[in-house]
Length: 204
Image (cartoon, rainbow, N blue to C red; front, side, top):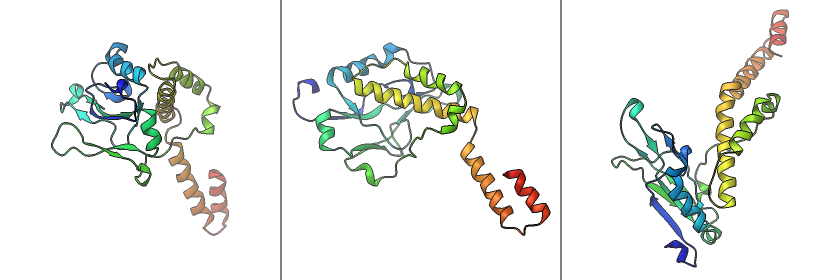
């Protein structure tokens, strides 16, 4: 229906489907056919997913253990004309006090809301050759849709895979660095005794 509409448009609500396995936790891994209907919609209309801030999933099946499944079923998509009118628009996932679906809020000026911490590629990752394989694998994932949608989805996949790999390979490096810096400062603030200078040399 939206493909026949010439002006700017936005569709928002429960799509009852997920875009990819990134929008699902628990249950069986989704095959290409499971996301085909949404992919076809995006490809045929040039729809742009507005993304979100807040909890990743909007619907839980409220079961326990291995039977628990959570999915991002509720979303907002628009065409390029609509996004040009509202370039700062975005979606916020709210808390669901009663319904099994979390309410989603469309804000046309999302800049005033607190956004998630931006992703940054760490220079230390290049010291590990396996980082190249992580990027290559993520970039080769099969994505259907417009060229812009494919690019955005592959960047998102690369970002997520690098974060997981970083925790496994380097641990929480920044936290450890801050802890060591705090210890160095503590030692440097002490009197420059032989013992304290030797302790400082251990950290530096």
